[in-house]
Amino acid sequence: MRVRCVASSESTEEASVQVEDGVATETTIHARFGTAHLVPFLDRQPDRLESWRKLCEADKQPEQDVNQLYSSFTERGLSYGVSFQTLTSTACFTELGALARLQDPCKVECASWEKSLQLLHPAQLDGALLVELAARGEKSTYLPFAVRRTTIAAQCTSGDLWAAVRVQERSEASLLADVEIFNSDGQLAARLEGASC
Image 1 (cartoon, helix red, strand yellow):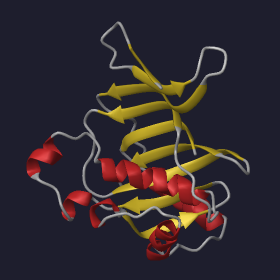
Image 2 (cartoon, helix red, strand yellow; image 1 turned 90 degrees about the horizontal axis):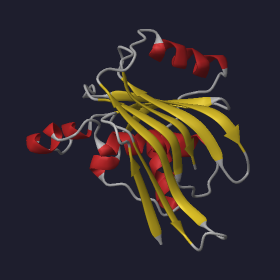
Image 3 (cartoon, rainbow, N blue to C red; image 1 turned 90 degrees about the vertical axis):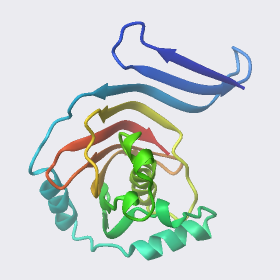
Image 4 (cartoon, rainbow, N blue to C red; image 1 turned 30 degrees about the vertical axis):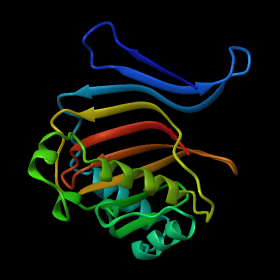
């Protein structure tokens, strides 16, 4: 097993990671994290949340019961503790994507020193990836294994956030999507481009 980490020679806050095994002629890639960028501020679009809500309404999809969603994950062997159950009752899934509200896990359990060390709480990032998994609309277990490019705001907004998933490609074996995490004012906290599961 090899882990290949590449960091930019300049101070551009860029990095990439790949986990692989095998010999040069028969390498198996287990996980890939393309490039990561840390930027001072990401774009703010006040109508971002509203445009995602309209997408759900246009597809006439009702909001889903998040408790049932977590129960279905448990049935598939994915158990989440209270602090990692960030999806709230507001969640909508369509053929084109999904939208869900992510509660602030620090409302449940988080030390102030822990919060001060984070740009984006890991439980909220995990919740956004769960939205992508749920967008598959299947009862099988899939795990995220690659992200082509990640951008995270250095001045990341805290509190309750929203996760929006736009499906790019869908097949029986995988789903490729772009994921945005933002607040209700449309301030982007993070963007995952080419997230695969």
